[in-house]
Amino acid sequence: MNKFITAVKFLLPVVALGSFAIPTAAIIGKVGGWQFFFNQDFNISEKINAAQRIIGWLALLLAAYQIMLGSFRTLLEKLYGPGKILKIHMFTGPLVLGFVILHPLLYVFYESGINKDSIAKGLEIFIYSFNPTEKESVINFGRLAFYGLLITAGAAILRRKLAWRNVWKILHFLNYGIFIFLILHIRVGADANIWPFNAIAVIAVIFVAAGFLYRIFEKIKIIRLKKTAKIDSRRIAI
Ligand code: HEM
Ligand code: HEM
Image (cartoon, rainbow, N blue to C red):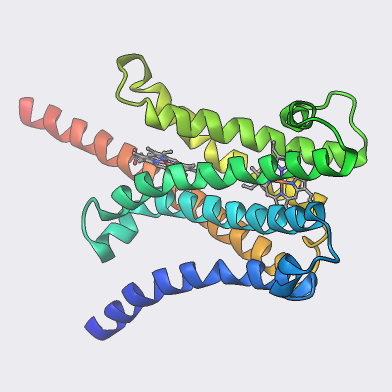
């Protein structure tokens, strides 16, 4: 049993870190290998587009793992030790945000390069479109997820401020809902419906949903325990 637990403890981070190589290698493969990035025949905008797609998939994976670290925290801390998973979660939070910001930012450079627009005009990509084309309406889900992640992560960073004490946890819980926006958004890309990207999306959805259910059952258990503790203390008082 001990050997099994040691193997699981070793394998979980190895599989998680290894999974980042899958979309990266798949997109590099699709554009014709890593030489593509050094090939003078392709212009800089095409290279930025490939990088933007890779960063998008890495941001999606990072967000999924971040949610799993949060939701399965108590379970994982039984494996790795108390406080360890929360420490990792708080360390990786800004990293997730970095990738979430870099992905649309690269699209700004791509768009500005293609349309010969100024960077300032390109930055309009961050603004929600109220009169969208079909493609724009799928990009809108990415924008909603982007705004949402800034709010939920911002609330977590500012959690020690008095006024935020209870509100931040409620806001942070919205991360599960934000993941739905992310899944709706990735259809905008050229890859979401093909292997291995469709498998990544399906597996991520299954684990995030499992994490959500796990947290709900955990909360129900805590409420029940509190109730029985109250009844017991009343009995003692009688
Ligand atoms: C940026 C810095 C971040 C900090 C400081 C932070 C902090 C925390 C803390 C302290 C908890 C534990 C709350 C508790 O158990 O009561 C938590 C839980 C959680 N975090 Fe974060 N987090 C950050 C970013 C993120 C991001 C970007 C995501 C999503 C992509 C995320 C998703 C979650 C989830 C799903 C939970 C579990 C919530 C629940 O079920 O109650 N966190 N986070
Ligand atoms: C302001 C917010 C966002 C904008 C403007 C945006 C824009 C775009 C665009 C234009 C594409 C299509 C790229 C192409 O195929 O050429 C795309 C694809 C994608 N985006 Fe976003 N996005 C945003 C937020 C996000 C966020 C927050 C994530 C993940 C955390 C994300 C993950 C992805 C993924 C995985 C793809 C698919 C790439 C592919 O299959 O080629 N996006 N995004």
